[in-house]
Amino acid sequence: MSSRRDFITLLGGGATAWPLAARAQQTGKTPRVGYIRAGTLDNDPYREEFVRGMRDLGYLEGRNIAYEFRHYGDDAESIPALISDLLRAKVDIIVVGGAAAVRAAQTATQSIPIVMGAVSDPLGVGLIAGLARPGGNTTGLSVLSTELTVKRLELLKEVMPQAVRIAILQQPANPAHPVFIKGVEPTAGLLGFNYWILEAPGSEDFEPNFARMREWPADAIFVLDDATFIAYRAGIAEAAARYRLPLICGFREMTEAGCLFSYSASLKDAWYRSASFVDKILKGAKPSDLPVQQSTKFEFVINLKTARALGLEIPPTLIARADEVIE
Image (tube, rainbow, N blue to C red):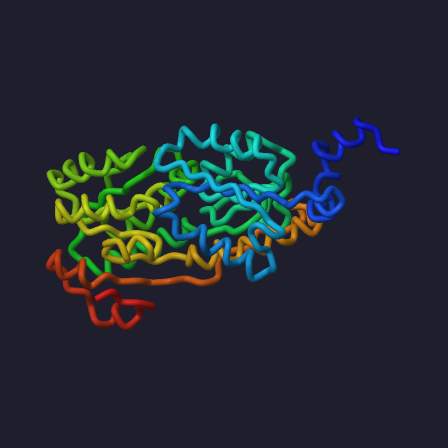
């Protein structure tokens, strides 16, 4: 006969908490998945991909799975409070986007599994112990942003051979950004770039930063990968267009909004694949035993509409290499 103490231990203690699906079957409880990302429900293109991935694995909301969606807009300081809200909602797993949100989730709980929807260089930032055996309660998808950031610099030199002054747009709340900047410094020097780092904690910082860069003047704005920048991509693109500043970005969603070009992994693909981690954990796997997967689908997207508005000529050889060209 189980005591109340046994029941509490099952819910809150160590390794016995991992077989979530089995526990849910025994208690008649529907597994509850928490989800937290930047932006809002209206400008988050990845929530639908994650839910589609879950659906393709047989999980239907209202039948055998429940979701708790939270969005922190561009306010990274609100992340801990939203994660506390998810914990009060008794979620069994937390699916997280962005290094800052993963770190906040790890601080809040060492027992509830955390799945990274897509996080830039989680090993370099210290979010996991290793790719093969991440340790702790965190696993998921990794984007090799440092290497991809260097590649974008090389592409910028091909697109704009005359470019010398570049501004680097950084989110100070993102723990990965100092790693990226350190990684690109040698390549920036080799390519003859001088750079100025701009900090944009919130969407209200785009306009004044770009005004300063127009006065410098910057030849281009190099946007580092960040969940809040993706969420507010339209605002970044509109502000840059007013000051006629080319934006060099990571993800295709940014180029669709108005960046000159982007080169990185497919975030939609990563978020779709993150559902497989949730499925395995619900079936009893420990996050510490699930290897972190690297993104395998990469996209080079050019926005010719933006190029024409800026009076830039994109070399035909570069257009031929693009996975997609936005006319």
